[in-house]
Length: 491
Image 1: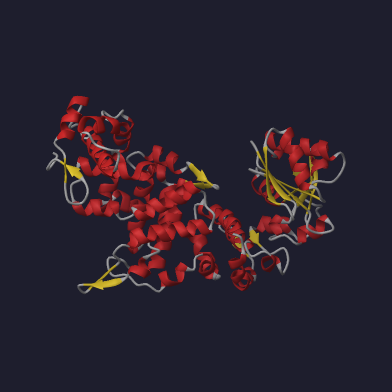
Image 2: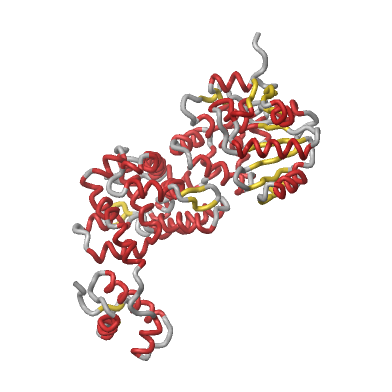
């Protein structure tokens, strides 16, 4: 019979080995263990991104000293439970044992593949150490099986349902019998979980390549009805052609399409490589722009149940984009998303119909393209990906074919103009508000702002190239119904 699994220190990145050496020196022979996902990932793939540590007590005090030693930042996550994070080149999570012994602590964890530990001292001194494995996690790791570490694993902490789904989404992984039933029974408890904890797990899910499949798994066990109560009305709201699905199914398919587009963004023409880099930009809370597109895809039609009406014999959802932006912002607030992430999601939901309207208008004019990028700003690329995913979710079409097909021509045209419009936006304005007020005797107010925007637009369209031309152009503008300034049709 073979002995326990052994973890080699050489499998850790140099920065992680430095952390272990520091912890071993600070503990001076007192126990500390490398635990959980760090051990799991090293055994599974030979690498781990973060360092998870457990000590019998005093984790926060150890974190303070460790942060000072590594010139990092300490974040207290849960003071009563002795949990903190040291944020630096390597993210280090420290926690007190939640049971009298290490083995009891591991048995009280979520899944067997996370109920693993290695002594830091032995690993730092000898370069290798045996894996403590009281629940059979090493064997389940080899089988790629998500199994509960104990019968009350999910009931004791229902947010673990989301964590289990993330594990099961890994290629070749599956849930053990009984996990789904336990998740379904525990799901109502998610209503009492802090928004920050839900956010951390949900963002982690959205950042996977199969977030749509993960949302479906959560839906199967009843978790989505708790996490997003609005989904109940969405699944009860039918849609007319060209939609083939109810609002909820369409939204899930939009997320699945966004998964594919984000994963293959570099292959989308034009501008694939810059697009891929853009979607990888962090927004905060661990959410990237790509994840933000997926969350927006889930929420983009959230207000359709409230706005569904029959108008002249046709089912319409008038204003669902504007109201949906408010509802999406409320969901983001429940999840305690950062202001920046919330603003991005709100803007994408509010504007999600914009590319479709441009497509229906026919030829994309210079002015229409300019105003699209002016209004969307940094979220212009994000919206184009969301629009393609939304279109794919109408009938379940492959998203790449939507992008490359006739229906995606306006998306490709807009994407092809990104760099040109960015250069125009960066050009110094010919006039500023003070220039207009001085030249025309205006006082500060919305009229100056509207006039200034139209002069700026004329500059971007090449209609004026000097300050004198800009002033002459402004002199001919007049106020019209709708509160906008213009001088008749500007070519």
